[in-house]
Length: 216
Length: 219
Image 1 (cartoon, rainbow over the protein chains, first blue to last red):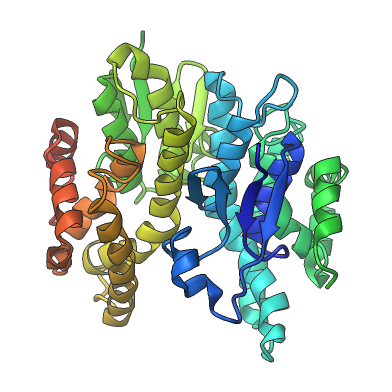
Image 2 (cartoon, rainbow over the protein chains, first blue to last red):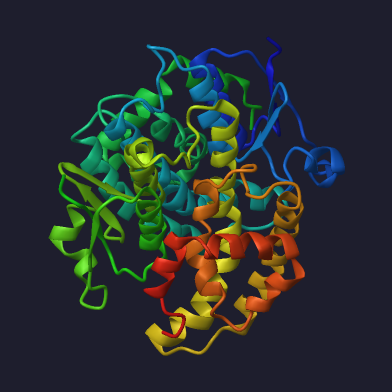
């Protein structure tokens, strides 16, 4: 079986989301860079893979996909085993809880954390100054979310229950970059969240993806 | 079997996302209103169902869920077999992946472009008494046109978004698009004949017609 291909910059958070799933299931894969600076994402070859000109895109034989959470679901579904079942689609209640907390990540956590990552990392890269007001506003939102996460993770080892799932892994990329900002101390007030994060970081799949990220 | 409960105003677009799936599978359900004006969504009783203090929430016996798309998928997984519908296609790797892709597109690309127009033209003036912010509307319409370019290309190849079969991906577009058609910008869709035809197919579905009746366009 030919390795699947993930198209996009290896340091991209949304690419990393897919890579951690590929590592969890032990699938063979290849990362194919897409040069944003050269406008490669807007050229016909890439638009054929992702009509919105974004990354990641993904190829599994004849199947072309985009949207990192959709790609991740496909990977976890295709390579699922007894031991590695990160979607729980055979179980009504468990799969629903995976979906709930994956949607929380997508619609609440991500919109709160990503402006901080963007302001702290990407703006300086373009010669600008981070907008501290925006960062403070995002931190306020983060804290309200973390209150809820703390309550949840003090009851269960992982977000969907006592089993790790895509809901947990989907938090990895942005949180990883957040942990290298000065705002990381916010997590100290949330011991269950911090413990959950540390257990995710200790996963071999997560460590493998981190080791492949370009050094800042 | 007791009817499942959906907590939230029936006219809420996010609640409608769930209700259209309940209608498609013919499940018995009850809508329990949550009085947002009275801050009922922040009450301890509601927070026990949705810890983020949002609507909708959902209950099926002991199972309590939130996040409208997660709830809708639960409904489809539970009732699809007995109803003889297959809107998730989880039995087929390729089809399921396409459903997931276009479900994500609705959530991350289509809705963020379209819903500000709904909020500015319909919801904020009615609920907050503020005038429409035309700048936001214009910026959103520009984004929406680019999105509809892609949808037009896709829907000129297939009858529905995930392929030649109706799926959860298409149904997710119903609630906010329904409200968009009540704004002064509805005619935008005229420039996209395949998108328009696809929308009309969705709007003609009994489930969509039934729910649309409870979602008035004049607030």
